[in-house]
Length: 113
Picture 1 (tube, rainbow, N blue to C red):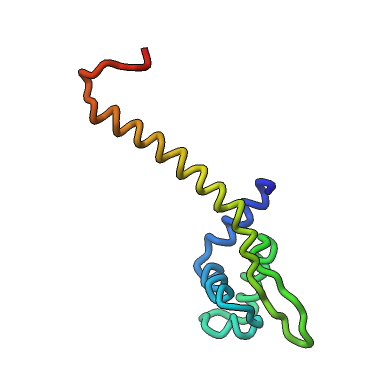
Picture 2: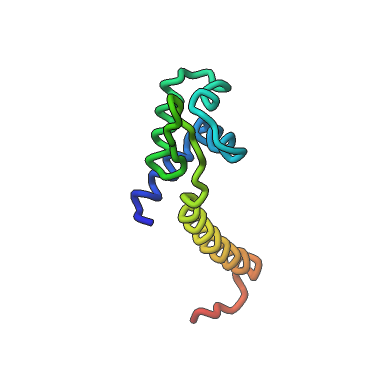
């Protein structure tokens, strides 16, 4: 995944309304009207949120007659998950090494010399 694509995914996930839309779509496809009902914002605002999710690849919209049906695309999260897992592992290793040094105290021999 290109870095800009990853940026779009994290930007899209950064908004609670968009995360709530994804949570709803995790239960199955829904029309834009169905998605907009529980939110205290306009239909147009929900449509804009869907546009952000769509540009990030997290949601697809399909025209069915007069309605737009939305579906989640969970595969778009794979690169974000990989990025998070790498950084979690990276920082866990470093923090564990730091904790070991702190626990060893200042009088322990330095193995790096």
